[in-house]
Amino acid sequence: MSKTETETIENSKSKLSVADLAFEKQGGLLPVIAQDAVSGAVLMLAYANREAVKKTQESGFAHYWSRSRNALWKKGESSGHLQKIVEVLVDCDEDTLLYKVQQSGAACHTGAANCFFRKLPTNTKGK
Image (cartoon, rainbow, N blue to C red; front, side, top):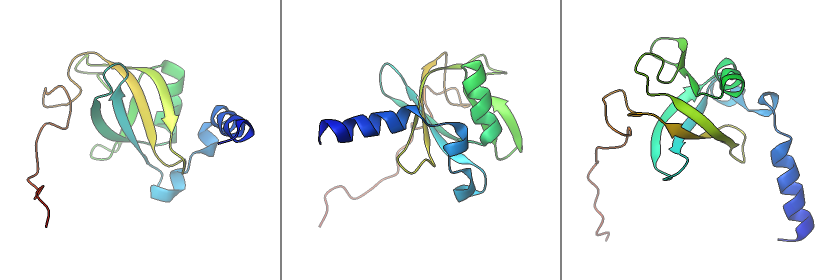
């Protein structure tokens, strides 16, 4: 990749705003992956509407849209297991977010460190 191409990509990254995000693709919600900023561990997947993303930007803490409660929520509001935002990344299609966070306590509502602690068996031997 040339220096000009790299500079163009870097400039386009810095110019994104909430208005650039493609909420309309998925009924007003974007999937958000929460990742531990230090270890790189994937903590959880949740969804955010425009208001949740704006609250995340304003407060510095992860906010999501609860599909089951049909309500905005701040992660850790009741449990104290907050997610402090380190960085928010947007995918190339502008329809998925990655929150790099400092997680306090468990990320999963079950009390597990993250939401991905169960395995689905697969045939890893292949044919």
